[in-house]
Amino acid sequence: MNRRIVGQTDATKVPRYAGLATFARLPTEAEAPEFDVAIVGVPFDAGVTYRPGARFGPSAVRQASRLLRPYHPASGTSPFDSLQVVDLGDIAASPFSIEDALASIQQGLAAVLATGARFVAIGGDHTIALPALRAVSAKHGPVALVHFDAHLDTWDTYFGEPYTHGTPFRRASEEGLLDHEASVHVGIRGSLYSAGDLADDGGMGFLIFGTDDVAERGPSAIAAEIRARIGPRPLYVSVDIDVLDPAHAPGTGTPEIGGLTSRELVTMLRKIRGLNVVGCDVVEVSPAYDHAEITAVAAANIVYEMLTLFVPVT
View (cartoon, rainbow, N blue to C red):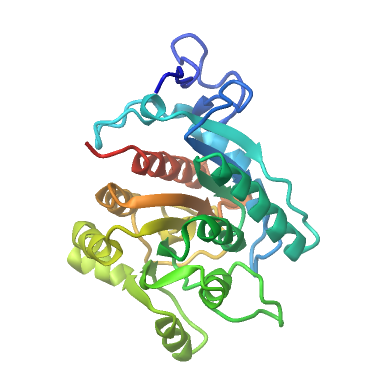
């Protein structure tokens, strides 16, 4: 690599609470026009079915990311030195037409992939995973999915509408975007509409690890099984922040008790490093329901963990 990597603003020269609130105070595209990984905000929440407000998630996560430092001890990597990471700002998605918004999001993320870079999208509600998967699969074909969430998100419709934050993975399955032999839900819990929800989900090829599975078997064992299932396939990782217990992430739209701890989630993300990750998202941060940036800080650190997934394992 001949180009010079532009890293974070130096916190020893500019206090963390000063300067532009890009993710982790990373450069913009104007400062680093050639990049390996892009942080992309997707401030869209017209697909929510309960609490709104995730449209403000990207800005909250960026603000909470100011404390992130360049060296990641658990992986022994410095992702901002190993890769050129930039913050591309936000995709302008219509707040009035969901289908128009999905098209804009897909187009924006496809433009990132066309440069040869990969992305971490910060939502927004989980509806944004569908256009993200459309963009990724257009380049890589059907992809494996590791989906961390309290909810299946494979329901059919809400009030007759096919595109909501509870339906993205059913639409993705129907559209042939997913590898049905290598897709996994992790952290599922809570009440359902009927037993048929699980049967429908299983028919799409998903393997489910509930929070009880993680508690009983441990996150490392679950991660090992995920690795074995995914193998060398191109992988998309999607994290709904409500996979965490409300004690760890109160600022979200559809909270469910009995969730993962932030430590369990981080452990599993670290244990899947080395898989062929081609894109990621972190969604459903709704800062109006947050306290002391608990949820935003969790989401910012999850994005940081995702960035280490792109660093080659040597």
